[in-house]
Length: 95
Image: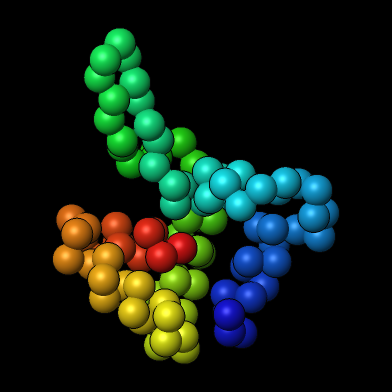
């Protein structure tokens, strides 16, 4: 993750592995997974605003760095970017 991102990730994740029982719980805290809102017959998927914004920034930067280091991350980002509204959205999808 690099000299700057690794300490930030460690600070956010902490050393207690029980704190995040699933990958979804990490994604929810970081704001990288969308929120599904449903009412009656209607269902929509929206951007998650309720999250740790500093953590979202860290994992988004981590995703940006992974594109230059990982072939699968580069491939995923190139496939995802045309479907997204912005680069940030595509980075969150990768994160």
